[in-house]
Image 1 (tube, rainbow, N blue to C red):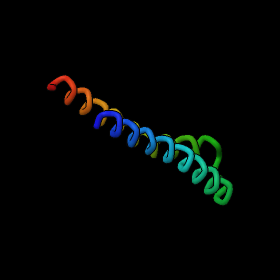
Image 2 (cartoon, helix red, strand yellow):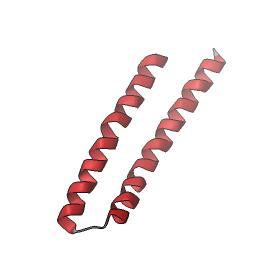
Image 3 (tube, rainbow, N blue to C red):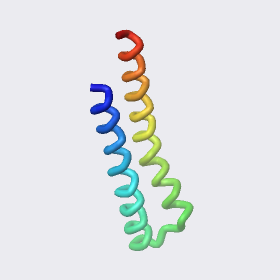
Length: 67
């Protein structure tokens, strides 16, 4: 279970990060955003994902410590 959960979390990160970057680059070109705006919006999207992943790893660690 532990390995499968970690694999799922990592696959979300590996899928979401490039997708967000491509989306922001495409929108930035169409809307003439500056690079700074793209970086800020990308971080605003990625930070909640990273917080979620961190919480999932903490839950896994707690479950392993209880066993």
